[in-house]
Length: 335
Ligand SMILES: NC(=O)c1ccc[n+]([C@@H]2O[C@H](COP(=O)([O-])OP(=O)(O)OC[C@H]3O[C@@H](n4cnc5c(N)ncnc54)[C@H](OP(=O)(O)O)[C@@H]3O)[C@@H](O)[C@H]2O)c1
Image 1 (cartoon, protein in one colour):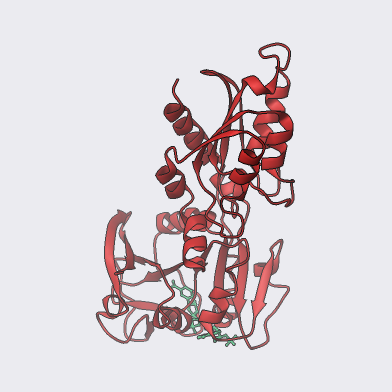
Image 2 (cartoon, rainbow, N blue to C red):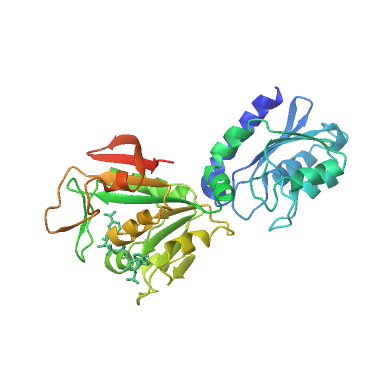
């Protein structure tokens, strides 16, 4: 097998851990003796071993059996090994200590504080490094992670459910607008994001849990509540969750405050007030709209004041699907 095929294998297998490794990027590593795979490792769970460490620890079992010394081996990893001593120690130093003489890397880490530093540590220790193999796929696979470091802010998506006549809800009432299938789809969307944000009214009226209820393991999103008024901190929203309660109303300031955190993506699930405030600030990258086949009528609250509000906010329809009797539309910013 050539390095290109092996990199594709590592990228594909790393993807299995995208819900459990987040908000960290998914990473895969393969230890090779010429073209023979000695071991593989993946960053499986947030806070646990990085991919390179898992692959190397596995390879150690075959030392003296399938190879004599680590200097005979090549390490292939989808993302540049980290240089910083975080929760699990520096991977670049670990690779040096293990004795590798060659490392093949997919993409350079986009984090400006660490970018290129892992490679420098390897090269300073006489390790031959090749960089850039399928870098575009590694970037695509870790879209939110690369976006955050390039744009200096998390990727922000707003998700709304609308009736056919453009309404959000009846005043002070909790009601489901869309079908069960759409609501199941929302669970999958939540599973993808690092944080879920809502406003005080939605918390008080809907009493939502806003976690991802799916049948696989997810490192659940942080929750963010924007409110200046009293709320019940024993409500289900706070149960088993890490919640940031924020009482400032400047949405730019709030979103940019996450630039140095691990949060790379935020899903906004709120009512018309907060959703329109977000859209006005031009800090939303994606808008997902589920529309039901039924109308709520004149007594319900509208999502927007104008008919073409979504386009006027600068969004363009990118895709549209049918889910049961609902329509799901994805809009992206036109820039
Ligand atoms: N159809 C749907 O997809 C959907 C989704 C979610 C909710 N809803 C419905 O929406 C209703 C609530 O909607 P809503 O429009 O009244 O409230 P909202 O948009 O959920 O929340 C507005 C609240 O957010 C807080 N906030 C903080 N900064 C803000 C800012 N810069 N701009 C605006 N708000 C800010 C304030 O909380 P404080 O007042 O606490 O200070 C404000 O009252 C509920 O009935 C719920 O059922 C519908």
